[in-house]
Length: 407
Image (cartoon, rainbow, N blue to C red; front, top):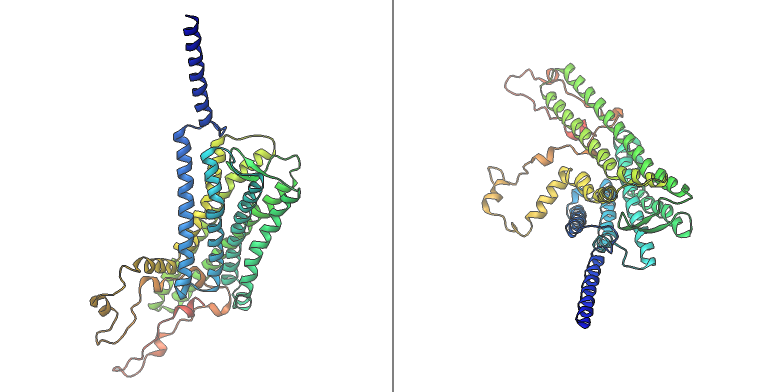
């Protein structure tokens, strides 16, 4: 009887230890997540990674496949796409693996490198968005200076170099003792440590990157909107004085351009603040000795990585020229040989070649918005002065080209 009792006791103890071992395996990430919660977090992370990588790759392909997109301004958009591609391919996979296991499964040296790349690519993305705002500000508000300094690719290359060297110089001090990179359990990623006794580096990093970029971008886009609004009002004033019917079309286009600038500027600033503000708030809560729940940390990190996901939509897909390029890319391989009916639509009634304008061709992009220089004032023709005395022959009055009214 004693042997039977001891055997059953040992069996019960082994079963209990096995259950504890299985429970330990499920909670080794020290986060106490259920299996459903863990796979939900992983699925969202994989979705963000795939969409960010695919969207930015499409932007790069579109720029190089369409000659209209291969311009100076889009050099900055391509650089922004590459920073997001690097983030999605070189950093996010480590974050996804950490979400799966709930801990850092690589060595200390890899943690230092991965944490550095996260800060490097993130800050480079911020600096590039600031460079795009800087480029558009000069293009619209200081047109003469834009033509002087941005007419060649030299200035744009300088901005791109600064967008990489600047973040490298700001993040590398952590490798030398000013600041620290460690695995953050609540973020499930290797990143900079916020709750250090010496908070000087964190304050320096936040103000020179997130806050400075937000302030500069907001000022640039607000000034751009005011400039476009003033130009639209001047155009409407010219149209009202000249009493020319054709100028109502130009006034309507100026209204559309003003609304487009307002929408684009609003989206850029709001998305930027939405993606980066939660992380900044949680970081400063840690700096001052308090703490936040894990769900706040994980959602703040999702928002930061969503910045890489939204950039292709804001700077690429919202642009009509990119939309046209994407449509052409999607038709490749499906309509390689055009049917005769589609070829006939591209010709005139006499069989001669004729170019048919589309809605994309007449949309004024943000790069073609008016400047405050006097050369950009629209010139409206006086129809009464051009009427001929001969009732049978009416001279053709050329329409105002977009390059005249929106140079």
